[in-house]
Image (tube, rainbow, N blue to C red; front, top):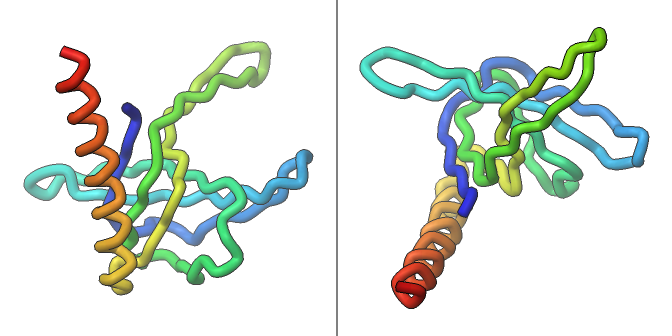
Length: 121
């Protein structure tokens, strides 16, 4: 199961663009605290976010639900890769009720996965 729950601050302004397919892609850089003053920057992309998505700016604290994806691409004749989080939901932490619903939905998914594993043994 590929589930990510990420909490951190936007380290830069979100960048939005329209892909050749017509889909909208918004890119974020989320900085998380990983331990004792250490931080990590995580690239996050969100394909076709809903129109009702709140406006987010640099330094906003967010909760991201999604999955990890590694994509490969060619640049200058060399194959490269990038690991990123593909978001299914991004919620400002200041919207506590929405953030709790996101966490509860992910917890339910994990519980169901655990039950499926237990039945399979």
